[in-house]
Image (cartoon, rainbow, N blue to C red):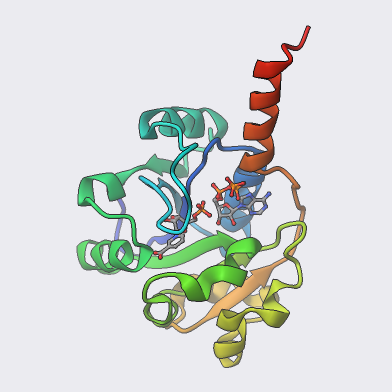
Length: 202
Ligand SMILES: Nc1ncnc2c1ncn2[C@@H]1O[C@H](COP(=O)(O)OP(=O)(O)OP(=O)(O)O)[C@@H](O)[C@H]1O
Ligand SMILES: O=C(O)c1ccc[n+]([C@@H]2O[C@H](COP(=O)([O-])O)[C@@H](O)[C@H]2O)c1
């Protein structure tokens, strides 16, 4: 895990990054700025437990691509979940907390994940242990109206005006951050790359 100093505010941004793109970079920069973070850990997962791994590029490549797209020194690209030998976020966060007392962590994710968050292993435990920042994504702006997580923890929603206070808040506490958006997606990039293989571009 990256080195941290006591009292720091650290965002945890997990993803497949298969491949990483400008949308991810925008989420990272938005989280750093709006949450007032000292660091953002860009956590490349060995594999999302809910997604097929058929098209998943090797971890080493996803790390290398991520480092190239995230030059801000506050962004720490890491894949420590692989070393922990598991890919469930609740378990990862338990380890992160145990090994980093005195750090103010926030889980950061795109709004599309808000809609499916209640399918994650021990999702209530995550939401009652870590503050959560949800960053807007085209197509998922209204996810907070219908998602089970948002409904369950409606009482714990923090106005985005107070987003900077999120790292210090006891969970449950979550906010939805609006701002510049990017429609980029890894699926679209993989499709384009596959097309270019079939029809080589000049
Ligand atoms: N364009 C985007 N805007 C906001 N959040 C995003 C965007 N793209 C990805 N994210 C968020 O970044 C994290 C990592 O996403 P992921 O690596 O799965 O990218 P993806 O483009 O959604 O991939 P795929 O298309 O393969 O599902 C997730 O929390 C996701 O919600
Ligand atoms: O723990 C789970 O059950 C779980 C289910 C789905 C996704 N996640 C995590 O959510 C993060 C975003 O995943 P992804 O594939 O949308 O980039 C990544 O860190 C995944 O490991 C975790």
